[in-house]
Image (tube, rainbow over all chains, first blue to last red):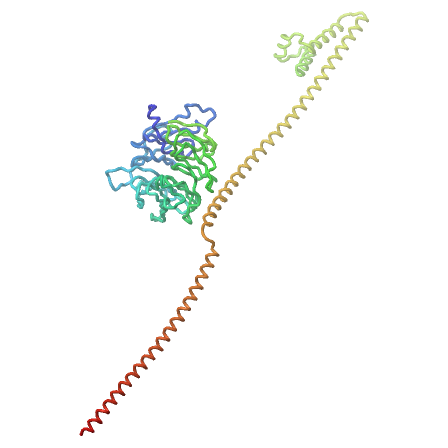
Length: 323
Length: 217
């Protein structure tokens, strides 16, 4: 990997292993790097422990989405989903467990897959991408059982509400659609850009980040990052963040979001921005929290840089892993 | 030091009876020779004692030698007393340190517990803060909508107005009906009267015609 390639590298996706001791990150060259968190966080960590333990090319195109199940790492690139066993990855074997493609209507173009989530209730994988549709695949049999159509432009992000078993999807067309996962029918459609307090016409109407926490939903992208109350379908707070936010999560009493700008923003539900923590990449694409493992409870962010920042105390950057 | 002292005294007294001893102590004595300080004093005392026992001294010399041995013995006793006291002091110090150690252990565990408690408190406080924020956000949205009492009152007023107006409308309609009927009656009577007048006229003109015809005959 030459210096020019490193300079132009962007990290698009991250996922922690089920045990919480490893981090997998995917970049725009189609490579997946596996880092050992226990080595990087141990007291005698060195420069070498901040390099990946395994780095391999997984897809032809960029790896836009990574997802971990209890045993496998799922990665999605240009139209195909590959699964890698975590046990095998830890042993440095790069053979995929399986590779599947959702059934696309046109066989000419292969649309990219932007987001993947798991529905734990019926063990199905929900995938959204460039063909404007959401495909649902059963994890055990590998059959794509349904397609949810409704968006008029490609889908950026997906989210799942456990209690009501609803799928939320946000896309380039500016609409957040809510689907019932049991009947596969659309339930609501919120066009965020039509609300004056959120809309930012200078950036566009696309929705690139979605997060839910029981009755509340965060959405942002072209319009400002805003907190919505889903029962009344009304925006309750709008966050005054300057750039477009690419990923946001709820964490305890805070909302953390990353996007344009070299910082992680900590916000409160009331609409105030509590802190902006600086990071190395000039703009961030992905934020991941390792909540499964209490020893290695870190937050990692990646973006337009070959370095992934690791935060042990969420208020400041501890160190960086690099590809 | 005290152990060494006792061992050497033991050894010195046994040397007379040539009892088997530890190899280590034997070697130590061989290497050490007389030893230093107290050991030396005891060895000298023993040597002078045996010399005094076996040799023939004049009574004055014997007496002076005896005195010297007594002083030496007194010195040995003094140093023994000192070391005993030091030993006691060490034991007491050890106990003291043990007590302090146990105390510190206890305060460490209690500090750990307090830390765990405080962490739980923080979690609770964070949850409470989140709930408060959510409440505030919803309250702000609700405030934007008009007050329910106001709207109810407005609705009631509108209802009443509506009722009043419909009353008036009914009244007006009734009146209209009545007038219509009255006019109808009036018009029909006028028409009938007109008819009767016409009939009368016709009858009159018929009568005059008949009378003129009769007169013409």
